[in-house]
Image (cartoon, rainbow, N blue to C red):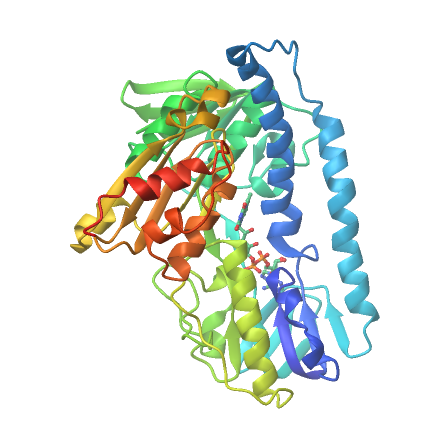
Length: 466
Ligand SMILES: Cc1cc2nc3c(=O)[nH]c(=O)nc-3n(C[C@H](O)[C@H](O)[C@H](O)COP(=O)(O)OP(=O)(O)OC[C@H]3O[C@@H](n4cnc5c(N)ncnc54)[C@H](O)[C@@H]3O)c2cc1C
């Protein structure tokens, strides 16, 4: 039975662990799917590469409002898809080839399951043991287990998840997207812009419900003339009538049927712990299946670390990358290759973006969350339409809300509008490094008349105590 000093399960963020400290470590990497994991192959990167052409189409449609006529803007699905994967697939393949070529690395292309302490059984029939294990096995899209027909992935039959929808041969004429999170909203933007007749079903009374209430309400208003967003609506049944899918829904209008060519399930993601038999190795899990880890990202089993979606409450790539840096350091220390103290997670703010149209970006608690926690805070909302660049954009929906302590410590920012994910970075920096809101606003120049004046004005508008 092969024994390794270090076994890494999963090649998403797990593949970035191998710093120079591991050059003489006997490492095994186990990967059940494509090298590079979710972000590279079926997540952040391809979706944003589809979002950009979708943005261009929508901007062309919007251009009439600023006196520019761009006629017949349309996207070429096959050309876009092939361009995207012609760039991504070689990176995945190259990553795998590089690891296979490394003399100290063994690559197992198989699914791993724990059978004991740092002991794994592989779907290829092999068994491996290790001194140290890093579990970086990520999460997967969940299906609608209680709706027959939508309880299994069937791309050929027209039932997709984010794993398959970006490689479709042709665009369907009609699509039902089930879910109201960021994955559902980004795909609704992409496919609506590409000319698909999209219906999005969201169980709750608002879409993107982790966002500030005003942001998700603004989003719903902004997309209303682009596609059919149905709130408080669930799919209760699905049948294929030989030519099309018929989805039965229950919502404010009672029971209705939607005829569609394709269904995209985007109802959330679950950590892959169940497929790992985590309990067999003594790895405890949270109520939602995430591995329990401490601030050094140690699991409940000795010499086993975890990182990324398998253990993180934030299913975000920048969080997984940060955790990978911590685990790389701590594993190198544990393996005796680095003489240093272990590193721990800190309490830095965790930002996220939604690359919808309009774009959304935020960090920190919402107004409601602050109120529930009894935190004393002040707020200011700056509309894009009230700064000079917003006039140039003829912006209709953009807004940035900042919450801060009355003394000026920035607690949160919630933004919807063009380039939100870039725009709020100075606020992420200020909140992370504890800078005073008015010092950030007044202690530097803000390029006039750039869109960043939205940030400057939001900070200046905060009714601080001094
Ligand atoms: C459509 C979509 C869009 C997204 N967009 C963004 C975005 O814009 N920004 C952002 O920050 N995040 C985004 N995310 C989330 C982001 O992709 C994830 O948070 C991140 O990729 C998680 O990385 P990871 O290393 O934890 O897991 P992964 O990258 O998923 O890697 C886990 C790997 O482990 C393998 N594996 C699983 N189980 C086993 C097993 N038993 N044996 C062997 N191998 C196994 C899997 O095949 C996979 O390759 C998006 C996700 C999706 C689905």
